[in-house]
Amino acid sequence: MSLRPRDVFLRLVHGVADGNFDELPELYGEVTDVRHPMATPKSEPLSSRRALQEHFTVPPEDRASLPKRQVVDVVVHATADPEVIVAEFAYEFTRPDGSTSKVPCVFVMRVRNGRIIESRDYIDPIRTYTARGDLDLLIASLRGDAS
Image (cartoon, rainbow, N blue to C red):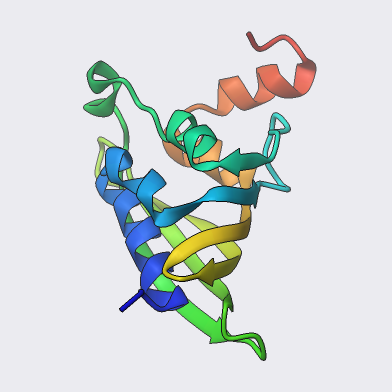
């Protein structure tokens, strides 16, 4: 039995929040169309499981420094197409000082046979960089001097 779109979505966002990056590419089909329309700097579409594996690759030495986050405020909307859902949620980041900030997200996702084959992931870039403490990187990318 393949997973329902809602279940696949929940595995994805909780996997990201928990840092289980090695498991995430298996949630996608071999051929995909994953886009991040609000990404800054602009990102190219991810069209294969292999591309997603590269996308989710975080070197082990960098994993410990990733900010803690959890998934909150989840609302999943069914659509007339049983393969497609619209999911609203937020990543809540916890900074080292204990303060938190939320990054609102909306994913429009097509899941077929338990695998994501298409997704549009709308994530607020300003709040993301701010929550991660990387606002200087965002400013540099907007100026065009990020490497």
